[in-house]
Image (cartoon, rainbow, N blue to C red; front, side, top):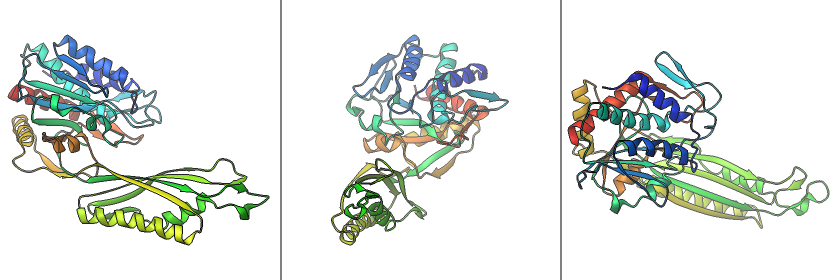
Amino acid sequence: MINRERLTKTFCDLVSIDSPSGEEEKVRDFIENKLLKMGFQINIDSYGNLIANTEKSSKENIILSAHMDTVEPGRGIIPVVDKDTIYSKEDTILGGDCKAGLTGILEALDSLKENKHELKNLTLIFTREEEVALQGARHLDFSKINGKKAIIFDGEGPPSVITSSSPTYVGFDIEIIGRAAHAGVEPEKGISAIKIATNLINRLPQGRLDEETTFNIGRIEGGTVRNAVPSNLYIEGEFRTSSIETMDNLNQSLKTAVEDTMNEIEESQINLKSEIQFEKYTIEKDNSALKVVLNSLDKLGLTPTLKGSGGGTDGNIFMKNDIESVVIGMGVKGMHTINENVSIPDLIDCANLCENIIQQNT
């Protein structure tokens, strides 16, 4: 039986451990210690992802997954439990994304162990660096993963909310090279990288372009001191869409904006690199992981809601590697903001759902 007090403590313990992307080791140790006591066989892959299998396993294992990292500001988190809600005391994220997912899985396993349920045909995958373009999942060796259906606990809202689709994500980096000069003595000899960047950015779209497409400049860094014409500047941006035609058009718009800017500002140099970080998917009705989740939701009396997402998860990578996957909610609201909070009743439902999935499929 899911234990509210134990679940709440596990969640608060997890969010109290700093684990921004690339610094997941202490959270991984916390999880590993718990799983070893339950008899799981642990494998830390070359990228630092944690893969755990029950002693009795097969190629038909059910896969449960969540990621270990959080976004910034996510250091020194102090969780506050206020009746049915958990939030951060300070101006930090709470870390519910994705430690609520980790908690749901761990509490389900604690409950099953307490009830002496035999764990078998189960694989757990806990990835690192999910928040930086799904790097952990992208570096998984899928040839070593047992199972062809995965339930990923990484969605916003209650566990009855199922992510039905996700877009293709293209990240781009732009290096702008101008020419330095003293800003007070001979500014006319300089070419401002900031001026070049302004010209370029004004040629690009921003925000929501249509129902399935967004475009964003997320980071700009450049210049050295206030009294020098800046010679270098770097821009990081992204766009997301479910339309191949729109993706091609936006890629061309980027290239055209770069060319037009260099033609307008003589001697300017702009280097553009873009890469597809993950590819779109849409959940089909015959998806085997979806059937598992729908069956368990029905047994718990929870009504499913299928909802498209503009974000990406490890599910994008799993699907590309022939693992039928579904991403579900874990009781979190306000992801990636300092207003992030977790509903304890929803987190209990998440653990109950996870427990039922294990019971029905292992």
